[in-house]
Figure (cartoon, rainbow, N blue to C red):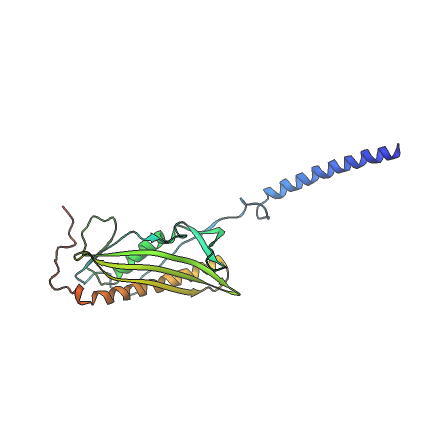
Length: 232
């Protein structure tokens, strides 16, 4: 009889323990900021920004240029913030994202850099309904935070190709490969480094374009003055 009562009491205590465990688990899963709660962790978003320095805003050159829509390289076509721990493997931060894909964030900044360079009579982004004599194609090959031991940094790679539309020829192509050390080994440190990399990219792009416009093939003499007029 005693053994039977002990068995019944043990079963009751087990049931009460299971009920308490279930209640605690439900409470923990609904609390904000606790491990195991995906909905409780806020998703933080970041963007790329750049403003030109004291540079001319009006174009003084004879050329007009159209910027094609910036393309995205494999693995960088969405708003994921990519980081690299092992070579050839792209990982993504779970709760930190860009406001848009790197290509879409960079596109207006590239146009601003071209416009503020003072190198061109006019500049526009596709699909602007204008005729131009030059076209600039760009592709984001990488924007990633790379971790190497106790340090991390950001790598920004962009391919730029300048075409002469009057001759249907490629004038020049260059891959810009920029690395910036991060001040902290976290996503925000990577964002700050990425924006410093963007500033360096814009300066290098302007220098690249200035060098190409000095080539004899792009001399202003003899080029049609109406190449940037609206089509009829």
